Length: 256
Image 1 (cartoon, rainbow, N blue to C red):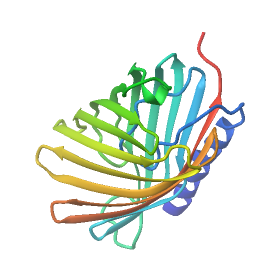
Image 2 (image 1 turned 90 degrees about the horizontal axis):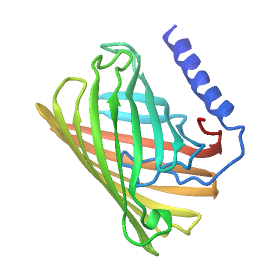
Image 3 (image 1 turned 45 degrees about the vertical axis):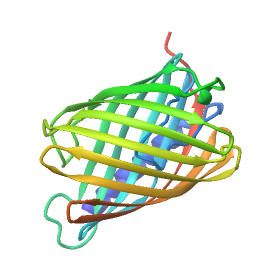
Image 4 (image 1 turned 180 degrees about the vertical axis):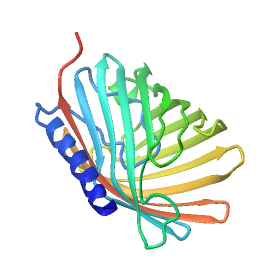
């Protein structure tokens, strides 16, 4: 029964992505496979779908499929986008302490560009902010939290760097901080190597230190594929993760 439910969840998420993709394409930049983000937003009337159909996560002795992860970015106005996200986890193995299927990393956010810079074809750094609610999970943390992030991005000829600083009030009602940095090699390359480092600190919880290496393949201006491998450590617990997915952008209209 649990396996059938997981298959139904996966089919529903994939069907939604396909239905949303039938409009005319516009330009997109993939910010999968990272945990951090960039100082840019979807254009007004544009929908970006960041889809990870299947990933693999090993945390200590526990193993899980991330099937799928989904982020929807909608350009609701000039310099503003609405972000909705969540990830479906399917625990592997025969001895599972809790529910096998749980939806986590759920959130609803607003993101806006504060300063046009190199990501908007202007001089200097691009600066943006993102803020919103950490929504209740399914079979996970039940509470509601909030977070706010400041992002700075700078693009040079051979390197692009994104810096993220985030403060949060978690679903468990504890303060937390996230600091992340993304490095991308030559943006003009169709396939470009990427890397990310981040630290996450939460009161009464072991600090997470994480690193990722991967690549982004821009197939065309509105479609990119990505893959990455991440390792992390929190206290005595090691984490290894494989991520792969895509980003599509489509024009879907704007509110009147």
